[in-house]
Length: 593
Image 1 (cartoon, rainbow, N blue to C red):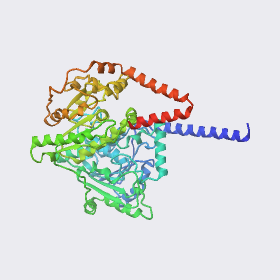
Image 2 (image 1 turned 60 degrees about the vertical axis):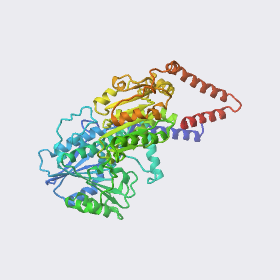
Image 3 (image 1 turned 90 degrees about the vertical axis):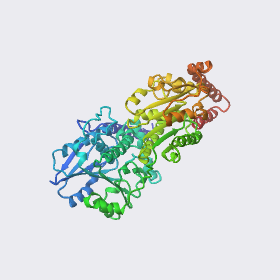
Image 4 (image 1 turned 120 degrees about the vertical axis):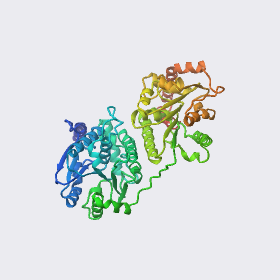
């Protein structure tokens, strides 16, 4: 071997060793430290009656509060400072739910039996999520904890919390804005995300992304807890959010759930991005950051801040009493939803008289056109589930007096709700109507109803819905717990069968045919189950049942057909070029059809 070859080999070995070292370090740091507790506390005593709890949310740990600590010490020398530290989110696999529980316990231990008259939480980035979660847990709102005891008393420390001061708090979860983030930083984040998924690291950080259960459950709990305490005349802390005008992670629209208490103050900070919000030494904007932080922590300054920065418009509509989500399926942009909306509003008007439509809201938000290939990919399906939970939270914030939240889903829309109910224990809907369902037959409706997430479900089963009877049915036969043939074969649990309709004459779209609207409307508006004897039938055609039972054979024939055609093209005169075009064409079709 020549000198160049040896040098190339040595370089390759070095790169491999470096790569293995990086992966090993990431793996080790993902589980470090894990002794007895995730939360570590460093207390700086001042001897006063105020406690400042500082919760970081980045790789710098509590050091990021160095400038803020100096400001607090300069203005409130006798205050106690509790610096909270937990594993850095950049690599850690720590459970954020555990961190929130431990933080709540740690603050309560410090407060119980103490002389503190007030507690102020200062939080940066995802520290805002952890601290707010600790607070709702302290209020005994932990319905996402299987061991939750709803009769337990709230913790003493929550009664003394005067305010939250959020420094670029990611209240809606981490979701970078490409238009504000440089290409290099965005590329770094994307590569880091791929690396973390491949190595199974940074689950803490990924748990704090928008739509993840930790974030979505918190947002729902915050809204419900604020309204419940307000209705009972209980104390609720003020929330001050300082946000940079060029923040590339948090947007102005990310605070709807935090504003529900009506004591939310939004303070913009010029020339400041997500990381620099706590840098008070910057020669250009450091003075403004420090000044606004001082006002946020001063007891007598909240009134001035409220006058200087009026409440953000939250777009609430207190007249709405019933909300109905209508969600379409795959290869569909939901054109039928407009027609169903008109029918629902007309029926609501007939039942409630003039002004009735103002009290009902049909949510027609769409996750966009969803083709066959994304439908078969778990990650793509879950992206829609996270989107739906984000929409659900926005609806809770926007319609504070809605007593009923119902759902109509077709095809993939049924999967979105069923999966969301399993992943998000805070999700609650009243009446659920499914058509063309792709949910497994043995879906656990019993647990959903027993846990109070659902009150009633009605599944409309198509007589010749072979789309469901062949494709999701085959996946169900292969052991899938995500997709199934409930839209063709029906549910097996009694709770799913009680109100089930077998059968509607027609194919995959028959459940959302206008002839079925009266049944859906009666179920959602009147809470009764009606059937038109002239429309529904008692059995499915033999050929459709046989085709569904032989779905495995249909799949084999389709796969063999695709492989044989590919082999024929690959051995033809154009060889690999024709095969490459063929594969590309298949992917395009699956992505668009």
